Structures are given as C-alpha cells and as structure tokens.
Amino acid sequence: MIPRVDIEIESDIPAGATFWTPVPDDIGDEGFGFFQDVWPILDVSENEASEVIDAERVAVAFADSGSTDEREFEDLAKAIEDEYPDSLGDDAQAFMADSGWGGLESLELGVAGLVYALAACGFFPAASCRSHYDGMSSWSEYPVVMFAADEMHTQKLQPFIEASGCGLEGDSARSDLLCIYAPSIVEMMLLASALIAAKATFD
Image (cartoon, rainbow, N blue to C red):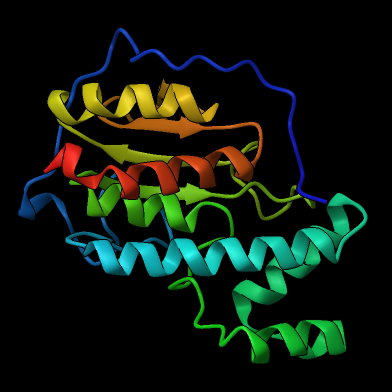
C-alpha cells in the first residue's frame, strides 16, 4: 500500500524563482545546497536513467502488492533500498533474486527515478526524500526532489509537472533551488517516465 499524503498541489513556477545553476566550484563531494548525506548526480545518460526508472517501477510494484498498510510498505521499501531482504522472509529474497535487482544507486524508492531523469535532461538534482512513515528518518512530510535549473529548462519542465499531478515550489531555506513535490511516489514516478520519454525536448 503506497503511502499518500493529503496536500495542496500548485504546479506553476514560483514567482520568486531565481533560475540559478551551479558552476563546478559550487559542487563538492556532497553535491551543493548544504544538504547532508548527499552526493552529486550529474551527466547521467538516458540509458542510465531508464535503468533506474525501470528498476524502481518493479520494486515499487513488489512493495505495493506485498503490503497492506503504510508501515509494511515502508519496511519493504527500506529492505529493498538497503538490499537486506533476509529480515523480511522468502518473498523479499525471491524478489531480489528473480528481478536481478541492481539497486537504486543508494537513493530512495519512489524518487530515485526522478532524480536520474532530471539529471539526464540537464537539471541539477540536489537532494530527495521519499517521505517515511515512521517520521523519524524523514526530513519531508511528502515526496520531494530538490534541484537547480535555468529558466529555459524550468519552463519546459512545468507542463510535465502539471500533467503528472506533481507540484512545484521554492525553498525558503535555499532560495536558489526549486522543489518538485507530490502526494505520493506514484506521481513522482509518472513524471520521471514522462521526462525520460521526452528527453529530446530538453536537449
């Protein structure tokens, strides 16, 4: 059962958007934007992004079908992300083996595909969070991907955000960044697939 949050969605480009993009000196081993436990994901190929999106789709379907509530989904998602299926029994072990699971490059289920799709389309992902049912390990109450982009890319991105059911907002703490958000990871995954299918739009 994929968790869903009741939030208001606003998909227009925020009035205060600065359309800033980082230069090489702005990007360190932990990316940019002064987030913790992050790393730069840039210059991603279309094939790399598609592989992550496909793997994520399979894993989310497994976690969704194998859970009856948000807590069970979180447990399955966390085990898949960490690649520790042993603690969750035969079904999780079988999934990892049968699907040829290759992981999500240490990102979280439900937002990993969008991070890679954005990077492949010329955006600068900064941080992401699936939002966690336990609340303790989550810095966002709903799924988010923070990123930097110039005005041209942002203008092209906005219709895809709206069509997928996602929202777009600024960040009061980091005014140079934009944030894609959604009531659930379903919309984030729809956006990821739409972006990579239309990658030529951003070239």
